[in-house]
Length: 444
Image 1 (cartoon, one colour):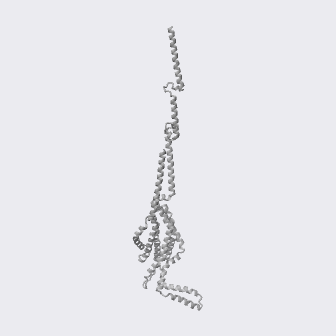
Image 2 (spheres, helix red, strand yellow):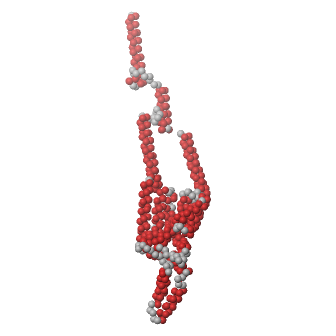
Image 3 (tube, rainbow, N blue to C red):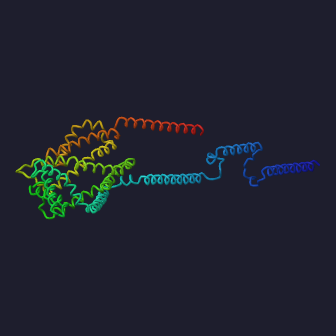
Protein backbone atom coordinates (compact mmCIF):
# COMPACT_ATOMS: atom_id res chain seq x y z
CA UNK A 1 0.00 0.00 0.00
CA UNK A 2 2.77 2.26 0.90
CA UNK A 3 4.68 1.65 -2.28
CA UNK A 4 1.73 2.44 -4.49
CA UNK A 5 1.02 5.65 -2.71
CA UNK A 6 4.66 6.68 -2.96
CA UNK A 7 4.68 6.07 -6.70
CA UNK A 8 1.60 8.23 -7.13
CA UNK A 9 3.24 11.05 -5.15
CA UNK A 10 6.36 10.88 -7.30
CA UNK A 11 4.26 11.08 -10.50
CA UNK A 12 2.38 14.09 -9.18
CA UNK A 13 5.66 15.86 -8.33
CA UNK A 14 7.02 15.25 -11.88
CA UNK A 15 3.83 16.61 -13.46
CA UNK A 16 4.01 19.74 -11.32
CA UNK A 17 7.69 20.26 -12.19
CA UNK A 18 7.08 19.92 -15.93
CA UNK A 19 4.09 22.27 -15.69
CA UNK A 20 6.07 24.95 -13.96
CA UNK A 21 8.86 24.68 -16.55
CA UNK A 22 6.40 25.04 -19.42
CA UNK A 23 4.74 28.07 -17.80
CA UNK A 24 8.15 29.79 -17.36
CA UNK A 25 9.05 29.10 -20.99
CA UNK A 26 5.68 30.43 -22.18
CA UNK A 27 6.11 33.60 -20.13
CA UNK A 28 9.55 34.15 -21.57
CA UNK A 29 8.33 33.72 -25.15
CA UNK A 30 5.43 36.08 -24.58
CA UNK A 31 7.58 38.72 -23.00
CA UNK A 32 10.27 38.85 -25.76
CA UNK A 33 8.13 37.94 -28.81
CA UNK A 34 11.40 37.12 -30.53
CA UNK A 35 12.17 33.37 -30.87
CA UNK A 36 15.79 34.17 -31.75
CA UNK A 37 16.40 35.31 -28.21
CA UNK A 38 15.47 31.98 -26.56
CA UNK A 39 18.91 30.50 -26.57
CA UNK A 40 21.06 33.69 -26.80
CA UNK A 41 21.20 34.54 -23.14
CA UNK A 42 20.43 38.31 -23.71
CA UNK A 43 18.69 39.85 -20.70
CA UNK A 44 15.18 41.13 -21.23
CA UNK A 45 14.67 44.97 -20.77
CA UNK A 46 12.07 46.10 -18.28
CA UNK A 47 9.31 48.64 -18.88
CA UNK A 48 11.14 51.31 -16.89
CA UNK A 49 14.21 50.93 -19.06
CA UNK A 50 12.07 51.26 -22.18
CA UNK A 51 10.47 54.48 -20.90
CA UNK A 52 13.85 56.00 -20.08
CA UNK A 53 15.17 55.09 -23.54
CA UNK A 54 12.18 56.76 -25.19
CA UNK A 55 12.71 59.95 -23.18
CA UNK A 56 16.37 60.00 -24.24
CA UNK A 57 15.37 59.63 -27.91
CA UNK A 58 12.90 62.50 -27.64
CA UNK A 59 15.52 64.73 -26.00
CA UNK A 60 18.05 63.93 -28.72
CA UNK A 61 15.47 64.71 -31.42
CA UNK A 62 14.73 68.05 -29.77
CA UNK A 63 18.45 68.90 -29.65
CA UNK A 64 18.92 67.99 -33.32
CA UNK A 65 16.01 70.25 -34.28
CA UNK A 66 17.49 73.18 -32.32
CA UNK A 67 21.10 72.67 -33.56
CA UNK A 68 20.94 71.07 -37.01
CA UNK A 69 24.66 71.71 -37.58
CA UNK A 70 25.65 69.49 -34.67
CA UNK A 71 23.16 66.82 -35.62
CA UNK A 72 25.39 65.32 -38.25
CA UNK A 73 28.21 64.85 -35.77
CA UNK A 74 26.04 63.54 -32.94
CA UNK A 75 25.15 59.95 -32.25
CA UNK A 76 21.49 60.61 -32.78
CA UNK A 77 21.96 62.31 -36.15
CA UNK A 78 21.01 61.16 -39.61
CA UNK A 79 21.94 57.83 -41.05
CA UNK A 80 24.43 59.40 -43.48
CA UNK A 81 27.95 58.17 -42.72
CA UNK A 82 30.49 60.73 -41.58
CA UNK A 83 32.75 60.06 -44.55
CA UNK A 84 29.97 60.97 -46.93
CA UNK A 85 29.28 64.17 -44.98
CA UNK A 86 32.94 65.14 -45.07
CA UNK A 87 33.15 64.44 -48.80
CA UNK A 88 30.04 66.53 -49.46
CA UNK A 89 31.41 69.36 -47.32
CA UNK A 90 34.75 69.33 -49.09
CA UNK A 91 33.00 69.28 -52.47
CA UNK A 92 30.82 72.21 -51.41
CA UNK A 93 33.82 74.12 -50.09
CA UNK A 94 35.78 73.42 -53.26
CA UNK A 95 32.90 74.58 -55.40
CA UNK A 96 32.49 77.72 -53.29
CA UNK A 97 36.22 78.37 -53.52
CA UNK A 98 36.05 77.90 -57.28
CA UNK A 99 33.11 80.27 -57.52
CA UNK A 100 34.83 82.87 -55.33
CA UNK A 101 38.04 82.45 -57.33
CA UNK A 102 36.18 82.92 -60.59
CA UNK A 103 34.45 86.01 -59.16
CA UNK A 104 37.83 87.40 -58.07
CA UNK A 105 39.22 86.73 -61.53
CA UNK A 106 36.22 88.42 -63.10
CA UNK A 107 36.71 91.43 -60.82
CA UNK A 108 40.40 91.55 -61.70
CA UNK A 109 39.52 91.36 -65.39
CA UNK A 110 36.97 94.13 -64.96
CA UNK A 111 39.51 96.29 -63.15
CA UNK A 112 42.10 95.65 -65.83
CA UNK A 113 39.55 96.29 -68.52
CA UNK A 114 38.45 99.54 -66.89
CA UNK A 115 42.00 100.88 -67.00
CA UNK A 116 43.47 99.11 -69.95
CA UNK A 117 46.00 101.83 -70.67
CA UNK A 118 47.62 101.32 -67.26
CA UNK A 119 48.03 97.58 -67.82
CA UNK A 120 49.37 98.19 -71.31
CA UNK A 121 51.78 100.85 -70.13
CA UNK A 122 53.06 98.57 -67.34
CA UNK A 123 53.65 95.74 -69.79
CA UNK A 124 55.18 97.86 -72.57
CA UNK A 125 58.79 96.98 -73.28
CA UNK A 126 61.50 99.11 -74.84
CA UNK A 127 60.66 97.85 -78.31
CA UNK A 128 57.00 98.71 -77.72
CA UNK A 129 57.97 102.26 -76.76
CA UNK A 130 60.17 102.55 -79.83
CA UNK A 131 57.33 101.28 -82.00
CA UNK A 132 54.97 103.82 -80.44
CA UNK A 133 57.54 106.59 -81.06
CA UNK A 134 57.87 105.53 -84.70
CA UNK A 135 54.10 105.68 -85.17
CA UNK A 136 53.88 109.14 -83.56
CA UNK A 137 56.75 110.52 -85.66
CA UNK A 138 55.21 109.11 -88.83
CA UNK A 139 51.92 110.82 -88.06
CA UNK A 140 53.71 114.12 -87.38
CA UNK A 141 55.64 113.84 -90.65
CA UNK A 142 52.45 113.18 -92.64
CA UNK A 143 50.71 116.11 -90.94
CA UNK A 144 53.63 118.46 -91.73
CA UNK A 145 53.64 117.33 -95.38
CA UNK A 146 49.91 118.04 -95.63
CA UNK A 147 50.44 121.46 -94.03
CA UNK A 148 53.30 122.23 -96.44
CA UNK A 149 51.14 121.36 -99.45
CA UNK A 150 48.35 123.60 -98.12
CA UNK A 151 50.73 126.51 -97.54
CA UNK A 152 52.82 126.25 -100.69
CA UNK A 153 50.24 128.19 -102.70
CA UNK A 154 50.87 131.17 -100.39
CA UNK A 155 54.67 130.78 -100.28
CA UNK A 156 55.33 133.96 -102.25
CA UNK A 157 53.16 136.09 -99.96
CA UNK A 158 54.77 134.56 -96.89
CA UNK A 159 58.20 135.14 -98.41
CA UNK A 160 57.41 138.84 -98.76
CA UNK A 161 56.14 138.96 -95.18
CA UNK A 162 59.32 137.33 -93.91
CA UNK A 163 61.51 139.74 -95.91
CA UNK A 164 59.55 142.81 -94.80
CA UNK A 165 61.40 143.52 -91.51
CA UNK A 166 64.73 143.73 -93.30
CA UNK A 167 63.34 145.78 -96.17
CA UNK A 168 61.95 148.31 -93.70
CA UNK A 169 65.40 148.66 -92.19
CA UNK A 170 66.84 149.32 -95.65
CA UNK A 171 64.22 151.95 -96.35
CA UNK A 172 64.91 153.63 -93.03
CA UNK A 173 68.62 153.77 -93.77
CA UNK A 174 67.95 155.28 -97.16
CA UNK A 175 65.77 157.93 -95.53
CA UNK A 176 68.52 158.71 -93.04
CA UNK A 177 71.30 158.69 -95.66
CA UNK A 178 69.46 159.33 -98.90
CA UNK A 179 70.98 158.79 -102.32
CA UNK A 180 68.36 161.31 -103.43
CA UNK A 181 65.95 162.94 -101.00
CA UNK A 182 62.44 161.58 -100.75
CA UNK A 183 60.96 164.99 -101.58
CA UNK A 184 62.82 164.96 -104.90
CA UNK A 185 60.82 161.97 -106.13
CA UNK A 186 57.53 163.52 -105.03
CA UNK A 187 58.20 166.87 -106.71
CA UNK A 188 59.55 165.16 -109.79
CA UNK A 189 56.39 163.09 -110.15
CA UNK A 190 54.10 166.10 -109.65
CA UNK A 191 55.92 168.31 -112.15
CA UNK A 192 56.19 165.51 -114.69
CA UNK A 193 52.46 164.85 -114.46
CA UNK A 194 51.59 168.55 -115.02
CA UNK A 195 53.97 168.99 -117.97
CA UNK A 196 52.94 165.86 -119.79
CA UNK A 197 49.27 166.50 -119.07
CA UNK A 198 49.44 169.96 -120.70
CA UNK A 199 51.12 168.45 -123.77
CA UNK A 200 48.36 165.89 -124.17
CA UNK A 201 50.10 162.84 -122.64
CA UNK A 202 47.45 160.11 -122.32
CA UNK A 203 49.11 158.01 -119.54
CA UNK A 204 49.50 160.51 -116.73
CA UNK A 205 48.03 157.99 -114.26
CA UNK A 206 51.11 155.78 -114.70
CA UNK A 207 53.62 158.50 -113.82
CA UNK A 208 53.56 157.68 -110.07
CA UNK A 209 54.35 154.04 -110.82
CA UNK A 210 57.23 155.17 -113.05
CA UNK A 211 58.65 157.40 -110.32
CA UNK A 212 58.45 154.65 -107.66
CA UNK A 213 60.13 152.16 -109.98
CA UNK A 214 62.85 154.68 -110.71
CA UNK A 215 63.41 155.17 -107.01
CA UNK A 216 63.70 151.42 -106.35
CA UNK A 217 66.10 151.02 -109.26
CA UNK A 218 68.33 153.77 -107.99
CA UNK A 219 68.33 152.14 -104.56
CA UNK A 220 69.47 148.89 -106.09
CA UNK A 221 72.17 150.71 -107.98
CA UNK A 222 73.29 152.13 -104.66
CA UNK A 223 73.45 148.57 -103.30
CA UNK A 224 70.75 149.26 -100.73
CA UNK A 225 67.52 147.38 -100.02
CA UNK A 226 67.83 144.08 -101.87
CA UNK A 227 68.88 140.44 -101.32
CA UNK A 228 71.06 138.32 -103.52
CA UNK A 229 71.45 134.63 -104.18
CA UNK A 230 74.20 132.78 -106.02
CA UNK A 231 72.80 129.25 -106.32
CA UNK A 232 70.24 128.97 -109.18
CA UNK A 233 67.69 126.93 -107.18
CA UNK A 234 68.22 128.89 -103.97
CA UNK A 235 65.08 131.03 -104.35
CA UNK A 236 62.98 127.95 -105.14
CA UNK A 237 64.21 126.05 -102.09
CA UNK A 238 63.61 129.17 -100.01
CA UNK A 239 59.94 129.01 -100.94
CA UNK A 240 59.92 125.29 -100.03
CA UNK A 241 61.47 126.02 -96.62
CA UNK A 242 58.94 128.75 -95.91
CA UNK A 243 56.08 126.42 -96.89
CA UNK A 244 57.40 123.68 -94.57
CA UNK A 245 57.75 126.07 -91.62
CA UNK A 246 54.30 127.56 -92.25
CA UNK A 247 52.82 124.05 -92.49
CA UNK A 248 54.45 123.11 -89.18
CA UNK A 249 52.91 126.13 -87.46
CA UNK A 250 49.57 125.32 -89.09
CA UNK A 251 49.44 121.72 -87.80
CA UNK A 252 51.26 122.44 -84.52
CA UNK A 253 48.20 121.48 -82.37
CA UNK A 254 48.16 118.01 -83.93
CA UNK A 255 51.95 117.66 -83.59
CA UNK A 256 51.85 118.58 -79.90
CA UNK A 257 48.90 116.21 -79.43
CA UNK A 258 51.08 113.37 -80.74
CA UNK A 259 53.92 114.39 -78.42
CA UNK A 260 51.64 114.44 -75.38
CA UNK A 261 50.05 111.20 -76.53
CA UNK A 262 53.47 109.53 -76.43
CA UNK A 263 54.00 110.83 -72.88
CA UNK A 264 50.47 109.87 -71.72
CA UNK A 265 51.16 106.17 -70.81
CA UNK A 266 53.54 107.35 -68.08
CA UNK A 267 50.90 109.54 -66.42
CA UNK A 268 48.08 108.84 -63.99
CA UNK A 269 44.49 108.58 -65.15
CA UNK A 270 43.53 111.95 -63.64
CA UNK A 271 46.46 113.59 -65.44
CA UNK A 272 45.60 112.20 -68.89
CA UNK A 273 42.50 114.36 -69.11
CA UNK A 274 44.84 117.34 -69.51
CA UNK A 275 46.34 116.00 -72.76
CA UNK A 276 44.10 117.80 -75.27
CA UNK A 277 44.13 121.15 -73.41
CA UNK A 278 47.90 120.86 -73.01
CA UNK A 279 48.31 120.23 -76.76
CA UNK A 280 46.21 123.28 -77.65
CA UNK A 281 47.98 125.51 -75.11
CA UNK A 282 51.38 124.23 -76.30
CA UNK A 283 50.52 125.24 -79.87
CA UNK A 284 49.34 128.67 -78.71
CA UNK A 285 52.55 129.30 -76.75
CA UNK A 286 54.66 128.08 -79.67
CA UNK A 287 52.94 130.43 -82.14
CA UNK A 288 53.05 133.28 -79.61
CA UNK A 289 56.81 132.89 -79.28
CA UNK A 290 57.24 133.00 -83.06
CA UNK A 291 55.06 136.14 -83.30
CA UNK A 292 57.04 137.77 -80.50
CA UNK A 293 60.26 137.09 -82.38
CA UNK A 294 58.85 138.46 -85.64
CA UNK A 295 57.24 141.66 -84.35
CA UNK A 296 59.56 142.55 -81.44
CA UNK A 297 62.96 140.95 -81.93
CA UNK A 298 63.35 141.16 -85.72
CA UNK A 299 63.00 144.97 -86.09
CA UNK A 300 65.45 145.79 -83.27
CA UNK A 301 67.84 143.01 -84.15
CA UNK A 302 68.04 143.77 -87.85
CA UNK A 303 68.40 147.48 -87.20
CA UNK A 304 71.31 146.75 -84.92
CA UNK A 305 73.00 144.53 -87.49
CA UNK A 306 72.42 146.94 -90.38
CA UNK A 307 73.78 149.90 -88.42
CA UNK A 308 77.35 148.78 -89.13
CA UNK A 309 76.91 149.60 -92.80
CA UNK A 310 78.97 152.65 -93.84
CA UNK A 311 80.06 154.32 -97.07
CA UNK A 312 82.83 151.78 -97.56
CA UNK A 313 80.86 148.77 -96.23
CA UNK A 314 77.60 147.85 -97.92
CA UNK A 315 75.23 145.40 -96.26
CA UNK A 316 73.85 143.08 -98.94
CA UNK A 317 72.42 140.00 -97.20
CA UNK A 318 72.41 136.63 -98.90
CA UNK A 319 68.94 135.12 -99.27
CA UNK A 320 69.69 131.65 -97.91
CA UNK A 321 71.60 132.92 -94.88
CA UNK A 322 68.96 135.52 -94.04
CA UNK A 323 66.17 132.95 -94.32
CA UNK A 324 68.02 130.42 -92.14
CA UNK A 325 68.66 133.13 -89.56
CA UNK A 326 64.97 134.12 -89.45
CA UNK A 327 63.65 130.56 -89.23
CA UNK A 328 66.14 129.71 -86.51
CA UNK A 329 64.97 132.66 -84.42
CA UNK A 330 61.32 131.78 -84.98
CA UNK A 331 61.80 128.22 -83.75
CA UNK A 332 64.00 129.35 -80.86
CA UNK A 333 61.44 131.82 -79.53
CA UNK A 334 58.63 129.34 -80.11
CA UNK A 335 60.31 126.71 -77.93
CA UNK A 336 61.40 129.26 -75.32
CA UNK A 337 57.79 130.30 -74.80
CA UNK A 338 56.99 126.71 -73.80
CA UNK A 339 58.83 127.25 -70.51
CA UNK A 340 55.75 128.16 -68.40
CA UNK A 341 53.91 125.15 -69.75
CA UNK A 342 56.89 122.92 -69.00
CA UNK A 343 57.02 124.26 -65.44
CA UNK A 344 53.27 123.68 -65.11
CA UNK A 345 53.74 120.04 -66.14
CA UNK A 346 56.57 119.51 -63.64
CA UNK A 347 54.59 121.26 -60.88
CA UNK A 348 51.56 119.03 -61.46
CA UNK A 349 53.80 115.98 -61.19
CA UNK A 350 55.21 117.31 -57.90
CA UNK A 351 58.77 117.57 -59.21
CA UNK A 352 59.17 121.32 -58.64
CA UNK A 353 57.67 123.94 -56.33
CA UNK A 354 57.52 127.72 -56.33
CA UNK A 355 59.84 127.95 -53.31
CA UNK A 356 62.44 125.77 -54.99
CA UNK A 357 62.24 127.76 -58.22
CA UNK A 358 62.75 131.01 -56.31
CA UNK A 359 65.83 129.62 -54.60
CA UNK A 360 67.30 128.58 -57.96
CA UNK A 361 66.54 131.86 -59.74
CA UNK A 362 70.21 132.86 -60.13
CA UNK A 363 71.03 129.54 -61.75
CA UNK A 364 68.02 129.93 -64.04
CA UNK A 365 69.27 133.34 -65.20
CA UNK A 366 72.68 131.88 -66.00
CA UNK A 367 71.13 128.96 -67.87
CA UNK A 368 68.88 131.42 -69.74
CA UNK A 369 71.86 133.32 -71.12
CA UNK A 370 73.68 130.11 -72.01
CA UNK A 371 70.58 128.78 -73.78
CA UNK A 372 70.13 132.08 -75.62
CA UNK A 373 73.75 131.92 -76.76
CA UNK A 374 73.17 128.42 -78.13
CA UNK A 375 69.88 129.16 -79.88
CA UNK A 376 70.76 132.57 -81.32
CA UNK A 377 73.67 133.77 -83.45
CA UNK A 378 76.91 134.52 -81.59
CA UNK A 379 76.26 138.17 -80.77
CA UNK A 380 75.39 139.71 -77.40
CA UNK A 381 72.50 141.81 -78.67
CA UNK A 382 70.39 138.92 -79.95
CA UNK A 383 71.39 136.89 -76.94
CA UNK A 384 70.00 139.56 -74.63
CA UNK A 385 66.83 139.80 -76.72
CA UNK A 386 66.18 136.12 -76.03
CA UNK A 387 67.54 135.88 -72.48
CA UNK A 388 65.30 138.74 -71.30
CA UNK A 389 62.00 137.09 -72.32
CA UNK A 390 63.32 133.76 -71.04
CA UNK A 391 63.88 135.22 -67.56
CA UNK A 392 60.43 136.82 -67.62
CA UNK A 393 58.87 133.50 -68.62
CA UNK A 394 60.73 131.83 -65.75
CA UNK A 395 59.13 134.29 -63.33
CA UNK A 396 55.74 133.50 -64.84
CA UNK A 397 56.52 129.81 -64.36
CA UNK A 398 57.13 130.43 -60.65
CA UNK A 399 53.61 131.80 -60.26
CA UNK A 400 52.23 128.93 -62.34
CA UNK A 401 53.90 126.47 -59.96
CA UNK A 402 52.52 128.43 -56.99
CA UNK A 403 48.90 128.13 -58.20
CA UNK A 404 49.00 124.62 -59.67
CA UNK A 405 51.88 122.78 -57.95
CA UNK A 406 51.27 119.73 -55.77
CA UNK A 407 54.08 120.53 -53.31
CA UNK A 408 52.70 123.91 -52.26
CA UNK A 409 51.93 124.32 -48.55
CA UNK A 410 48.19 124.82 -48.94
CA UNK A 411 47.92 121.79 -51.21
CA UNK A 412 49.95 119.67 -48.83
CA UNK A 413 47.75 120.82 -45.96
CA UNK A 414 44.60 119.87 -47.86
CA UNK A 415 46.11 116.54 -48.78
CA UNK A 416 47.02 115.83 -45.13
CA UNK A 417 43.48 116.70 -44.01
CA UNK A 418 41.98 114.44 -46.67
CA UNK A 419 44.28 111.56 -45.67
CA UNK A 420 43.39 112.05 -41.99
CA UNK A 421 39.66 111.98 -42.76
CA UNK A 422 40.08 108.85 -44.86
CA UNK A 423 42.07 107.16 -42.11
CA UNK A 424 39.36 108.05 -39.57
CA UNK A 425 36.70 106.51 -41.80
CA UNK A 426 38.78 103.35 -42.15
CA UNK A 427 39.25 103.14 -38.38
CA UNK A 428 35.50 103.53 -37.80
CA UNK A 429 34.77 100.82 -40.33
CA UNK A 430 37.33 98.50 -38.70
CA UNK A 431 35.80 99.12 -35.25
CA UNK A 432 32.33 98.33 -36.61
CA UNK A 433 33.57 95.05 -38.10
CA UNK A 434 35.23 94.09 -34.81
CA UNK A 435 32.02 94.79 -32.89
CA UNK A 436 30.00 92.63 -35.28
CA UNK A 437 32.46 89.75 -35.01
CA UNK A 438 32.38 89.93 -31.20
CA UNK A 439 28.58 89.83 -31.21
CA UNK A 440 28.57 86.82 -33.52
CA UNK A 441 31.10 84.99 -31.34
CA UNK A 442 28.99 85.71 -28.24
CA UNK A 443 25.89 84.32 -29.97
CA UNK A 444 27.75 81.15 -30.94
